[in-house]
Image 1 (cartoon, rainbow, N blue to C red):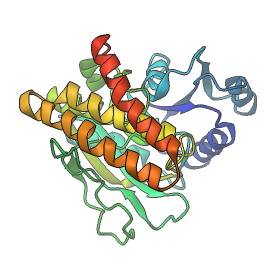
Image 2: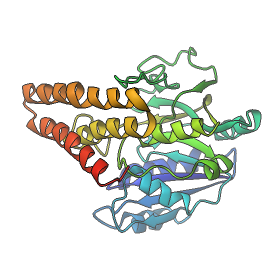
Image 3: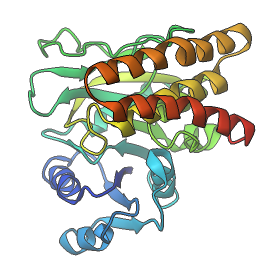
Image 4: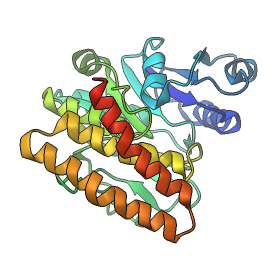
Length: 295
């Protein structure tokens, strides 16, 4: 059985659209869905339950972030496979059984991701795997990003990182690796989690015979102070937790001394002082987290 887990935060209509797409399209396997309401302004868990009585709903008493919300859903899940999907995604076809079959074909597979395409232009790819991350500059990219879905990205492969909008894990691997790291709150947690899967000897795979469509950044915005803060803080947390020695020092220093100042300047030049302030706060809060031993 597959347990779909999605986190909702003031996103009632988007979550309802996802649930409708599941009901209309997923017929290849037995499944359940767990919706975690991450302390929305109103009790959206109750409203979702009223509209979709077959969905399991959980309402958190506080906003636990992406990882915390998903971890709450994990505790309610009964499936052999857990499929974490953003609430701003929808299915227009099935193929979920093809993801499940990957674990049978590759016993070392702990996590598999479908092809992710943009919702607003359904012929454009957002994710067909990830390139490895370059240390110090901390640069990597999504394979196929912005490319037409012309069949060029229909080859299954091992990949470096999962896409947080749609990733399936086996219960066996989950029990070995553990829950998502909650220190990030937003961004980088799925990259960190994927790194720990690999560290434990599991592989992450890309399986294009299943496709999901992603609306992208409905909650945080594409260029918001909120996203800026968590992205630049997350970069430093990731380096601290996953790199060693000079690579750790160099990566954190590069972010603090080059990437963040550059973001401050571009924010000010664009007339967005909130972006500049958020980047500075990211540097400050990372130090606070180190001193308080939250990492």
